[in-house]
Image (cartoon, rainbow, N blue to C red; front, side):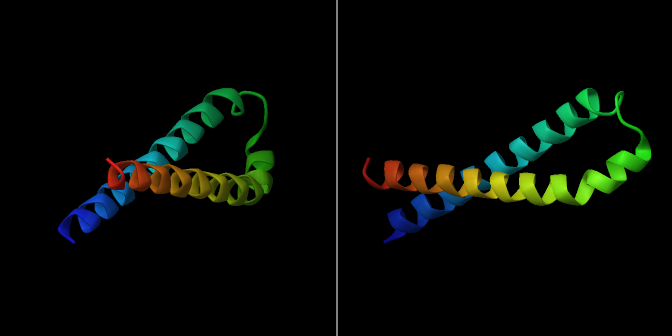
Length: 76
């Protein structure tokens, strides 16, 4: 029973790290690529749409990575 919880916590940790790394990568690349070409008003207008799309997709990717690692650890 302890091994199941250990695998679950490891998978949740990996999912969280994946989410944070994806989001950090997005922020760094967005600032380097988009900032020189659009003004502040355009960034503010598009911010809500960009964040809702990217945070949702990063969450889905993190969940899929966490679930796949859970099954990998569980079957090991």
